[in-house]
Amino acid sequence: MGIRLGTPGVGAPVPAAGLLDSYGRRATDMRLSLTDKCNLRCTYCMPAEGLQWLQKDQVLSREEIVRLVAIGVNLLGIRELRLTGGEPLVRADLVDIIADIRSQHPDLPVSLTTNGLGLDKKAQRLKDAGLTRINVSMDSLHSDTFAQLTRRPFLDRVLRGIEAAAAVGLGLVKINAVLMRGINDHEAPELLEWAVTHGFELRFIEQMPLDADHGWTREGMITASEIRERLTERFVLTPDPRNRDGAPAERWEVRRAEAPDVVVGTVGIIASVTEPFCADCRRTRVTAEGKIMSCLFSREETDLRDLLRSGADDAAIALRWQEAMWAKPKAHGMDHTGLGAADFVQPDRSMSAIGG
Image 1: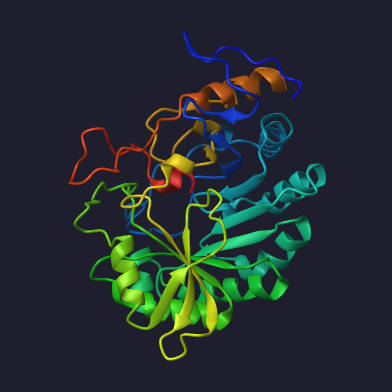
Image 2: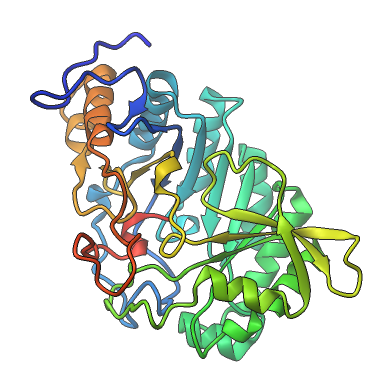
């Protein structure tokens, strides 16, 4: 690998090359947040008034982002990159960032998670810059419900963005949906019917305790088991035979109940709370201001921005990154029955401030 590995802690073994943790997991999937800003105010993520945004000089620059990706790929074994936010489309230099990354790493899968606002105007440029695939968050097909969940009346704009992404060939478009009890949970079969009809892959995500208002409760969330139960009102689900290979979503082949011999698509369910996949987690997260989070629910962060701006070489940055990942916890602490597991404390950051 070309870097000299140090000892990540007193008495701890020296990790092998790459982002290995003390439980033998190796991170190869990099989630990089480009901004904490967002133009929606989803109830499960952000308060109605928004958050205190980072100042421009606090956020990683285009050059710093490209350098971190290069360190991850060239020195630490990163094999897949997901650009997140906040809302990454609000960055004016997003297309340039993707183009820079693509020029250095022509074979690296680069995907983007977005709420879709403005995607219709940027889809072709993103494709031309080298974006591989896109995930769009959309929790309802009904304008009133969408506005209730996001506090913004922009469903038509999101749908235009999804259509544009599909039209320019941004891979298999994936749709992310969070079901909220008493609001849109009854829409699960309708969302899946829409997705398979249009050739999209729908992924339901359990609501996670990452809301800025800290109003999440286990009783209030719609579980993976409930999601499957709702879907079987209209569909037959069978396990997808493909290897999950560390993916957060458990995939299911979808057949309509009236034609159970015909696979019409697939659906994924990300059950971070009730059916956690911590034992095979392969992700490393970098926040918009350059802090490593070894786990989405971590309360500990490791700063790389200070090294980037202090003249440190790539090897020193890679070593600090390794040290952060070596300390990754075995699990997030929610994989216990009952409310308020003793070893889980909700992070101070909301999802938009972490990066999905």
